[in-house]
Every structure is written in C-alpha cells, then in structure tokens.
Image 1: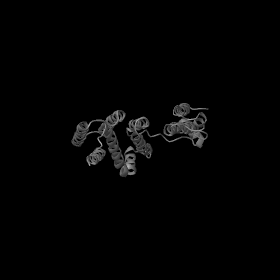
Image 2: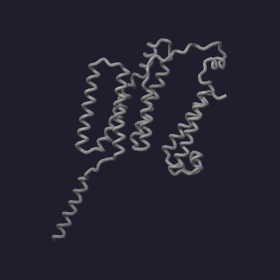
Image 3: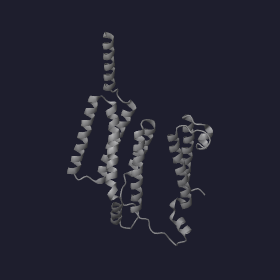
Image 4: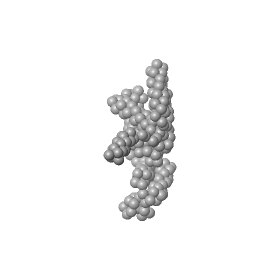
Length: 266
C-alpha cells in the first residue's frame, strides 16, 4: 500500500520524467532516444535533460524508501524491528536557514541553464555546501538528548571547514554576480557600481562588528545580499556584455594602413 509521502514523491518523479521527455524533444532529441535515456537516439540538450532525469530518479528512490519505512511511522518501525517501543524523538533544537539557501542554489542552476554557465556551477556549489551542512545539522540534533552537547558535536565536525567553505561561497557569489554587472554597464558605470558595493560591504561589516546581532539576523542579511547580487548578475547577463575596444587590432590595422600608404608613395 502506498503511503502519503510516497504518493507525492511518485507524482514528482513522474512530472520530472515527463518534463525530461518534453525538454529533450523540444531541444532536438529523438523520441526513442529521449524515452530510452539516450540508449537509442539523441536526447537533445544533455544538461537540462540530465538534470530533469536525475530529479526523476532521485525522487523515485525516495518514494521507494518512504514505502519501506512507512513514512517513518514509529509504531510500524517498532513492529518491523520486533521491539516493544521506540525511544522518544528529540525535536530539532536549532533553527536552520538552509532551506532558503537551497532555494537560492536551485534558482542559480535554473538561471545558469538559460543565461550563463557560471551561475549553473555556482548553484551546484551552493547545493553541495547546503547538503553537507544540512546532513550534519540533522544528525547532530539527534546525537544526544542534550541540545548543548549536540551543538558542540556539530561545531567539532564542521568547525574546521564551515567558515572557509561558506566564506569562499559568498565571495564566489559576489564575484560572479558583480562581474556580470561590470561587463554589462559602461566603464564609468562599472566604477560607480564597484564603489557602491565596496562601501555597502565595508559599512555592513563595521556595523555588524559593533552591534550584537543574532545569528539568524546576520544569516538573513547575508542571504539577502547574495540574492540582490544574484539578481544584478542575472540582469547583467541578460543584457549582455558591452562593446569593448580592441586597441591591439586597431594598432595592427593602423600599421598596415601606414605601410600601404608608404608603398603607394614609393
């Protein structure tokens, strides 16, 4: 018998598979190749087709898992394990912003498929960091019955890599987003935009260092700033790069024209 959770996952898997087929056909794939996952014939655009097919297969595996575990029902699992009861479940003790960051990563991947490969790679990096932190957070919240001890365990596991990893990701978001803005606007506009962003980043860092701000508020500020930079990068990528003057080529042309003029004079 299907559980409630598996029904939703099966539906999502089916929609993703149909989406992969439609996307493959629209992008020039062969009908047999699209249905057979490329075994016989082409699948159109490989990247988009692979992402949709991966979502379909992943949700299908999760649906089967929920059927086996009966949606994690405690009494059902106790009966399967042959025990009289199950221990009490410790609710999560810490809030998490990783859901918002996940949405940011998925949005970057979708935008990357349509606009720029840089955003696609950025989205994959974001989802990797989110997956690692979310898994460790979910595990540490239930490691013991003491929330304080669980937090210490989480920090010991992720402490050495969490700050460098998240810091590098934030720098990548700012660099990719702002680079697209700088390439789209004029030379003077790029200077003005860079100056404004520098003042905002420095001013925000100074204010946060002087004021006692909660971790959730600080995380929200960082996520909001990253979202604004992403929006600016998307607009810049959609507008396209401005025309650059090729001084080297012009110099070569001028030299050739000069030689031609001299030859004509001789």
